[in-house]
Length: 205
Image 1 (tube, rainbow, N blue to C red):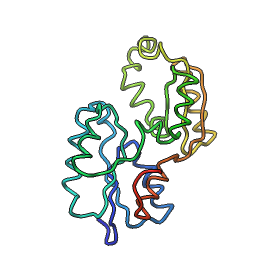
Image 2 (image 1 turned 90 degrees about the horizontal axis):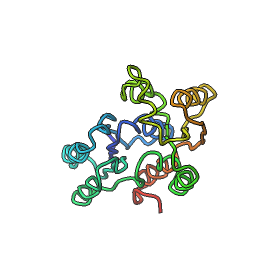
Image 3 (image 1 turned 180 degrees about the horizontal axis):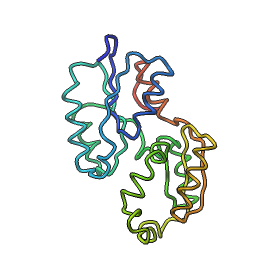
Image 4 (image 1 turned 120 degrees about the vertical axis):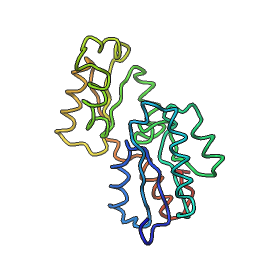
């Protein structure tokens, strides 16, 4: 813990870079960040216990602890544990909703229910998590099985650049999907962390 750090964010590894960028850009020197591996999404039944362990290891070291996760497949188990521990979680079912905003994401989902989403994190790790992770490098014929019910890839961009947009467009082509993108920035994540910064409730009002 830094000498003046009074708040801790326990974060999913898929949000690590964005949280650290926001902390540094805003000069939130009192905010520490500890991340759990993003690969826990592959075993969501382990997320709740891993977050609880982090809370117990740090409870006496910080005045405020905030958990930066969605439900992430825990089936409500994460929120139930956090209620027992009296620890707040940022709002949102998943990082897509967090970055896009709840209403905007609901509108996107209504417009195209068969959408596959990428964030900056997923775009950076597309080959590892999607192509190799699903075995498509070895068995490309499985793409229809995995993505046959999808029609569009939507890139929710935190820091869009022409190169990243082109890369996301290429990812859509590899999966045989139409392409769309939205410049979401950091969405509700910045608002949630700002609330911790000023000592307000750790969720948007």
